[in-house]
Amino acid sequence: MGQFDLILLGPPGAGKGTQAGRIVADYGIPHISTGDILRAAVKNQTPMGLEARRFMDAGELVPDSVVIGIVKDRLQEADTDRGFLMDGFPRTIPQAEALDATLDSIDRNISRVLAILVDEQELIRRLTGRRICRDCQTPFHVAFNPPAREGVCDVCGGELYQRDDDSEATVRNRLLVYNQQTEPLIDYYDRQGVLVRVDGEKEPDAVYEDIREAVGRP
Image 1 (cartoon, rainbow, N blue to C red):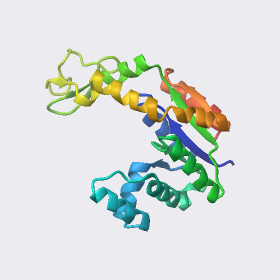
Image 2 (tube, helix red, strand yellow):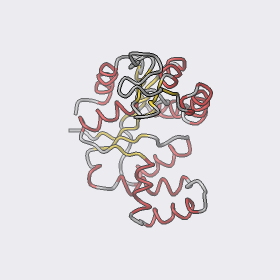
Image 3 (cartoon, rainbow, N blue to C red):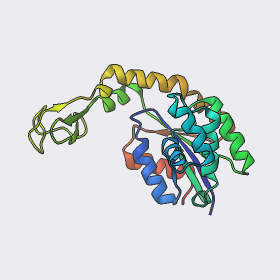
Image 4 (cartoon, one colour):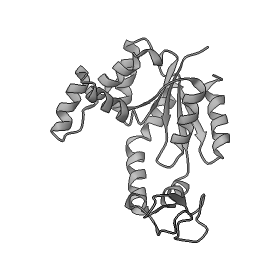
C-alpha cells in the first residue's frame, strides 16, 4: 500500500471541495487546509502558533516561514503516515520551494499534484450563478439548481439575491489573482514530473474517476 502525499490545485469554482471530500474518505488521509491548521496552532498555543499570533494581532500577514513551520508540524502527526491532501497551499512558487525543502527534511516528497482545469467562461458561469434566499439562506443556482419561480425561494417564498462576492467583477478579479499567483505552480510541478491535469468540466463522478486513475487505487 503506497503513500499518498497529494496537492490539489484549481481555481475558484473548479469543484475542489467536492473532490477533496471524496479523496480523503476513500484514501483515509487527512485534508490539510492551511487556514484550519493555522487557527488550530494559534488556539493550541504551539511555538509556531504563538509566532503566527504575533503577526495576526498586529494585523499583518503571517509570513511564509511561519506557515511552513506550522505545515511541517502538521505533517509529522500520526494521521499523515499514509499520506495527506494539501489544499490552498502552496499558492506561490516560493511557498512550493519551501514546502519541497520541508518535505525533504522529513524524508517525504509529493507523489501527485492534481490540477483541476476548467475554462474561465465556465468558471464564471458556475460562480456567478449562485443565488441565496434573504430569509432562510437556502442556496440555489440559476443553471444547476434553479428555483421553480425565478427570484423566489422554493422553501419559504423569500427573495433570492446574488452576494457581492459572486458578482462577475469580483469573480473575474479572484480568477485573475489565481492565474497570476498560483497558475505558475502548474509549470513548477510539471517540471518535477508529478503534475496530473484533470478535466474539471466533466461530471463530478468522471472527474473523480480520473483522479483515482492518476493517484492509484487506495
